[in-house]
Length: 236
Image 1: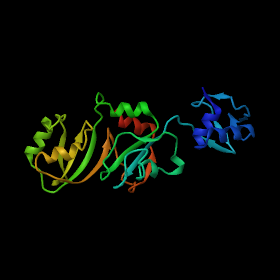
Image 2: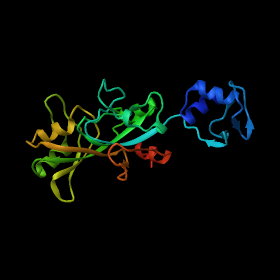
Image 3: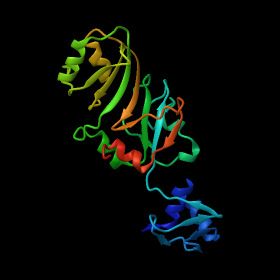
Image 4: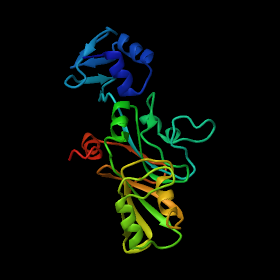
């Protein structure tokens, strides 16, 4: 059970004070019955909610897929620089939104934005090893030696990378499809640099089992369904 003012606040993306005002004025209906008690509790999963004749849907947390453009910081506060949270449209806005994992400022692609800290911890935890897949555009083609080294685990100056998968994109060896299960600082760039290869462009195209929706233009986003969230967790 959840307080009605919280349900309305979340469903309509308004403040708790504004939600209480709507309730007091008899504009909120629970199971077709007007409720004016701001302390009323409802079952957010089974009860139905109307406000001014509009059906409302309550989700405790929100999960957003964004196609991150270049030049944007993967953070909730960029200290003067534009962040991925700044790009979230008003209808998706909630308090405490943050990106679950970071992409470099010049890296593009799939960023997951949420207000669910437990979920973010689950997919980012080293124990979970949720895979992330990228397309790396290189200054020179890579060869089988690089592929085999990625599979064994590239040894960097300060750490040993977990085994990673590398293959060409449509047979073009200057474009590598890389799947890693870690999130070390500039990891993919440093892995290729070990073999004298420079990453010119980097795009994340997949988190877990869920691929980036290619209909999203740079900077656009969409709400993920429960099914898509499970795919990220590799539960389907």
